[in-house]
Length: 222
Length: 373
Image (cartoon, rainbow over the protein chains, first blue to last red):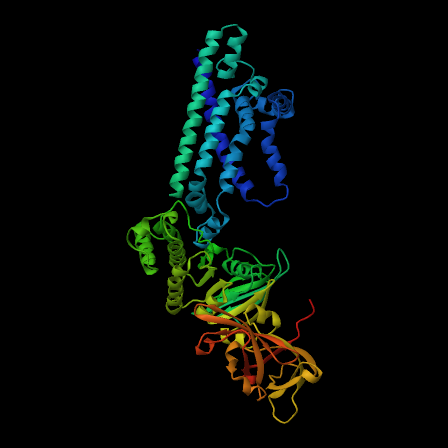
């Protein structure tokens, strides 16, 4: 059992959430509300990480942020190399998880009747007050499921992590990579335990989120 | 200047939907916007509330300018102190009745907010444990009352009601009518009610504004609009059933204010002496209407007297308190007539019966002929 890899995966998942939550709330809410013509293109871009093979995504991340690219060189000079580093892993993970965060958040905001925000405005609530007192409480079940999906998905991410980060223990060797390494080394017993941990963790998280969502939705209507 | 202390909304726009017209209401006056769905009634309300910015136009309330497109002035809904009751209530499903009302009072300390919310809920007739219920645990009528309380808690300078009764059953509706009538008496702000129910509009409103296809067609007291619709379309929209075409000959110079209306052609034609309001040029085809209360049933033998026409009853339908009768008048080759009867004269009315109908000719109202199409 590679505890270091598990800890790294959990750390990556938490940091990804912290970066992605504000971005996802903002983008999801904007997509839910806007009547802008280019919306379909933004929505397509949001879904893209879901339909592309991880290798293609990883390849382009390498091209754009790799050591040979101008952007990669800028970051490297700042002491933040984006390939084969934890920072690069976070970047890849954030981009890869955009659909898992943005889509549920967008659906949650879309489900809020438009006249509630108008009623809030007529009651004198400003934009932030409407967000905090009306929209977030109503969208909360959707936001929660977005958080859980993103968290679990980050724990299990493999392809992009491998392309972008390699397998440096303590830096980029996540639990999914560790499992792959164990299997490559014919250490099935080692792989077995880690796979089981990942399986149970994911199952628990998703089940808990479904339960919580059902309860929250019921509470909001009752 | 027309900086009236009440309400003035003026809109001219083509996009996103055509909307034209001007509505005015004095403080304490209840104005009903009536018209079919898609007439632009709700859009007018949204312009007044600041939920929609018109292409051109102004909104003045209580001496304040809420919107003046030409001057570049605009106040967001938050800065307008407008109470808007939405058609489907728009209550926050996650908040109690009291929590919904308290939303309008966020600028106040928390304890005061709760007291004030309870006060407004009691004012609309909701007390006890009802105020702690979520909207989904309240009946439609109760939800509507919460929405009204929330609008009142805003200390509105203008109260807007968008089809407030459409989703409420008949029983609850009577109570809400009383509530609105009470509010009209106690609030000294203009109230605008959007409705497609003419009965409701006549019951509650001081003045009607008739809208169709984004245009304000006519405004006036319900009585006036009903007696003197400006166009055949208005007559349609305010539910005037009897409308015919004739030829306006004009006055004959003997008696000012009166003139001759020819009904029918050739042998079958009759000439009616009706009021000349001076709005219609002579020798032209016209549409004319007569309000139902200017028609009375009479014995068949009176036909031929001035204003009396022989008629045959085609059908009678009793509908509870009222009876609808369709008749054919023996004039101008046979003209249809619909009567709504509620008194003693509806008894014993039968299909096939011959009788006479007396027209109070002073109540005949002339309008331009409806344009083709």
